[in-house]
Length: 112
Length: 112
Image (cartoon, rainbow over all chains, first blue to last red):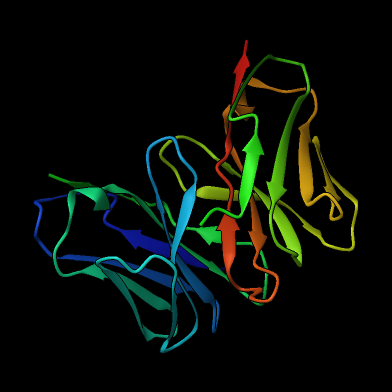
């Protein structure tokens, strides 16, 4: 069966520090991978999505970047965090076009 | 950017009553999906309806889609306290079927 791992569950980082959030999927090949951010009580904002290795579409670049070094690994990074980067970060995967998404458990990031 | 907008933003009903949430979107789509999110958790897929479908049922859930009005509704019948959660619609971007964008969500509270 397919599973998605996202860690850590919570993270507190100072302003200006780097960020690396990792997401891995097991049990499927060539998934579409997604990073979303959710502010408290709000909807999900699509940050990046990838339909294959080396193919990353950026929706809200700002100071965040994403990489897909392996088929089932998606990494969200920042060189210098801003206060506005605080939020709930969710990784998700799907197969095919427009299919249902399977979400990780999320990372609550607080930038102080 | 937000593709969908849910209405109402918040809904509080008595246990046993029906709950109806609406979603409007802006561009042509291939599919529309509904998700549920319990506080602080990842999203769980509820139902997917294709653009050539008008209505779909799954247990106590009924989804309708009106592509001419670019709108959808989610009906939860015979609500239970466990249905308390936020509900989101999500659409693909039509020409970019792998790009999945979420609406702002409806917070549903079921009073015992």
